Structures are given as structure tokens and as C-alpha cells.
Length: 387
Image 1 (cartoon, one colour):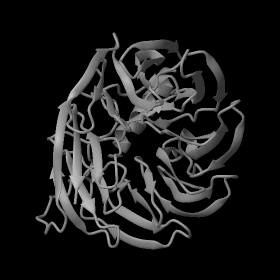
Image 2 (image 1 turned 30 degrees about the vertical axis):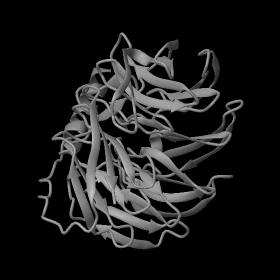
Image 3 (image 1 turned 90 degrees about the vertical axis):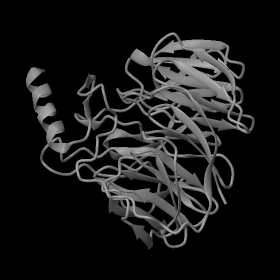
Image 4 (image 1 turned 60 degrees about the vertical axis):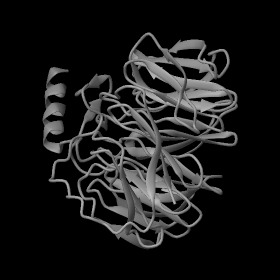
């Protein structure tokens, strides 16, 4: 085991990005690597759209982890590594309630139908109601880095051991689980689960994308987004990144050292794919798929055939978040707390706003046609409007 750890550590140092052996975390202090290359300086832009922070609040630091808020029609829910779980008024940013989980948290938040779910240290899953009352607590066998996915009936969680477990949303009773073999070496990242109708689609290490019937946990289909290649474990790291992006019967995804592509939601059949490496995920709208690669270039592809529409490389090596598609622009966060808004038509930067001086790791959360909710590493939760 010592030789394996030493080898993996050397690989990690050479790669400059955080990696994980199954059950052995190589770096507990960071879930995203600092830029290996000199980040591009921000050049002055002509802002053709107006972006402004309309409110902000503070939930506490994310530390090594990636926290993303959840938005419902009447609330924003946020959490932090120190154990804080908070409900925020989405109209003015004021705190409705704040509770402490009694332990450090490693991921959050998922919310639906009055259920608020977060992940605690050592594989604990906690659920609260809309008034902040704890409903239940459950234990997994491994650490959780991805926000729980919540439907009206289930809370679905993926552990680092690559087991996906569903709990009854009201009682915490385990309903089913699906186990997938974990690769020898993976990114220490937070691939997500997307729910649409009766199906949950999970992004997984090893370049896999899996569709699961939520009623019984039966795997509907399982496909490869990025096939592992190369002779060393490092070269074969091909993890599906971020959240699967779903729109009108298609699901799109991207893998580190793999591909970006779209698939039929009904059966997993490939519609198109192209080589691209990303560790943050994609978004999709009625026309395009948006992706940010590991160098900081942002791309738009047609969602029906994968035709290249535009590429913006002016944000190189700024550790971008996954892009978020709004009705009027595409938004990405960076390592200095900036949110950049790109034209959907040609990729030019049309607006920019700074939230604070710390990184935005999670994908900006779309909360209406022209509004975003973002959370920074230092704990600022902010609403941004673009007109």
C-alpha cells in the first residue's frame, strides 16, 4: 500500500491537479488545483450588458470542498464546510434561518419539495425540512464530495467508493443502491447527479454516464463519455466532470482527458462527441452546448450535431467554473471571484462583475432568465442580475 501511495503522490505532483485513490485521499486541503500556468490578465472590456450584484450574504468557507447553493421558488439554500446550513430569501438575500449540522460538511446543497440535503464528514448524509428541522441522518461507507440530488421522494447520493445510494426523502430509509467499480486513480472532484422525471443520470469516474430508474434503482443504460487511454494510471484518468446537462430528451456531458458530447436520454445512444478535456462540466440550452476546458477556453457547440460555433480563450488558466446558460448570456466564474458573461452568439465577453477575491468553484446557479446565484470559496453567496 505504501508503494502505491508513493507512486500516486508522485503522479499527483507531476499533474498539478488533485487525484484520489479509492479510500485514500492524497490532499485534503484542496478540491481544485491552483493554476499551473500564469492566468490570463483581465483586459478592459466594453460592457454591452449590465451585470450587477443585487444582494449578498455569507454562509462560511468551503475550505477544500465544492459547495453549490440550491434554488427553489421561495428560497436559496446554502451550506459551508463549518457545518452551517442556511435558508436565504431569494428576493433580498436576508437570512431566513441558519442551523449548524454539528459536524463539518463536505458537499451541498440539494433541495426539492421542502427537503434540504447536505453531506457531512465521514460519509454522513443529513436532511432538513424547509423550516430547518433535521429530519434524518444516514451513514455511507465513504466520503461524499458531490451535492445530494433530491426529488420529491428520494435523496440520491454518490460516495467516493462509486456507490450511488437512494434514501426515502422523508424518513431516510435506504431504498436502493448501485455500485460501480472505482478506477485506480481519480480526480478529487464532485461529479453530479441530474434528475429528470423518473430517471437519475449520474456522472461517474472512469468516464461513465449512468441512467438509473429511481423507482427501483435499476440501471437503465450505462455509457462511456471518455474511454481511458494510455499506459500509466495517470494517463488513464478519464472522469466525467460536473453535472450531466439535460434538455428536451438529450443529455450532454464532458470528461477529463476524454470527450464532450450529447446522448439520447431515452437509451444513451450517442448523438455526437468531440475530443475535449474538462474537470468542471457543461451546460445546454435550446441551441448550444457550452464547455470550459482545462486550459480555460470556453466553447459553444450546436447541441444537435456538435458543430463548433465559437471559442473564447481570453480567460486562459483562470480555473473557470462550468459555464451556466442564461437567456441572454453564458456565465463562468473564475479563481478570483469574477463572473464573466459571454455572448451566446459569438463568445465575446459582454459583461463582468466581481463577487469577492476568492474562487467560484461550482457552476453558477441559474435562478430565472437573467439571474444567477453564486457561492465563493470564502463563503459569499450572491445574486447577480444581467440586463
